[in-house]
Image (cartoon, rainbow, N blue to C red; front, top):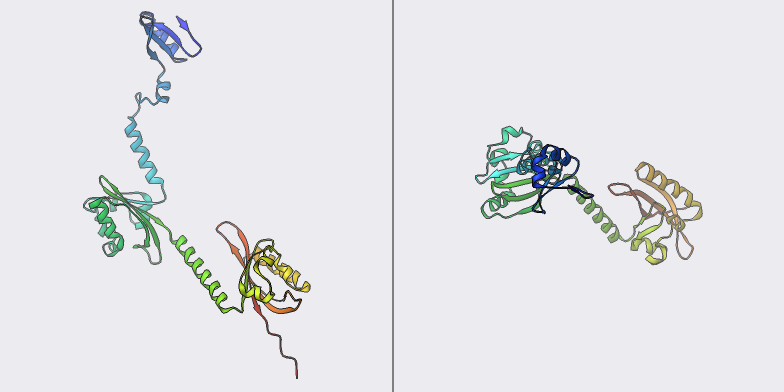
Length: 302
């Protein structure tokens, strides 16, 4: 018998005579069986064979893969509806059953139009027909056929059985975009007015953006105040109240409105009202937006 660092080597004749012993030996490390002095076969344990990808006495690889795919589809958060070429529901995952507000067992076998009565009048129906007839894919956002105000992202994937409809609730994302568009439109309206200034400031009060209205009040260009602390643009006596109001806005998330005095480049103090609101992304605060509105002084008593 020859022994190397990784395995034992034995001739075929010796292997046959001492099979029981070599079988036990292969449980610890591979045994190479030679024929006429040349390596011909390797005896390894069943565990090693399985780790190398062999099926052994376990279920066939195809069966395990199919089981894994089923478990994966049942666990994903997107709704999945499989339809056949006659537009009947062949399978649904739990997320799709929740979207349709029906038990999966009751949906299987139904026509798609029965499960979603409004689908035949929806724009997506045309794409479903093209998916089945011409194997075309589709991806897009659409108003939900299920609940008022809901938006769904739909992916259509052609399959041998017919096709898959993958649905994801994107109502929050659409609402965020609409809110962002509304805020952008409001700021554009303020800029069009011209008499109202606004600035975006960081958590440390640094000016990140100032509109033309605010720069006109100050009598400076944008680069002159970029990264300057907003409180430095105010009269000295007004700086502490602004800092306190900003801290409260960032702490509570509520808006604040205070009276203040803006100091222009020529040194004159202009009475203004400051409205402060937090800027916040999906995870943390980005700072604040400050609206600056000129404040008229009361007329002196005659």
